[in-house]
Image 1 (cartoon, rainbow, N blue to C red):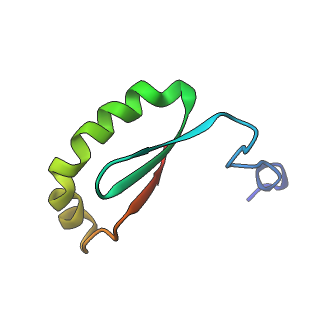
Image 2 (cartoon, helix red, strand yellow):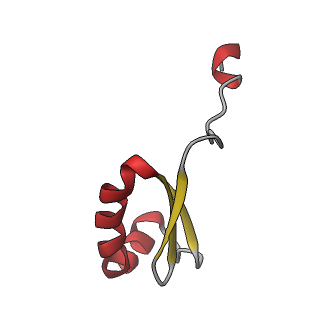
Amino acid sequence: MAPSAMAQDPVRPWRDWRTMRTENYRFHYLAELEAWTRDVASRVEAVDSAIAAHVGWPVPKPMHVVV
């Protein structure tokens, strides 16, 4: 990895991070991505079994997702 890439902070703690919860998922997102995150969060529980089948194991609960 290039030194300049390693120097960047991927989390960017100074940004306006928020968390949205569903029964089994925690979405951590930037404020400007709230509409998209809300849309995904509204459907994730319905496709939980498909996610587990895709990754090959049950998803640990709660699953944290960084958007």
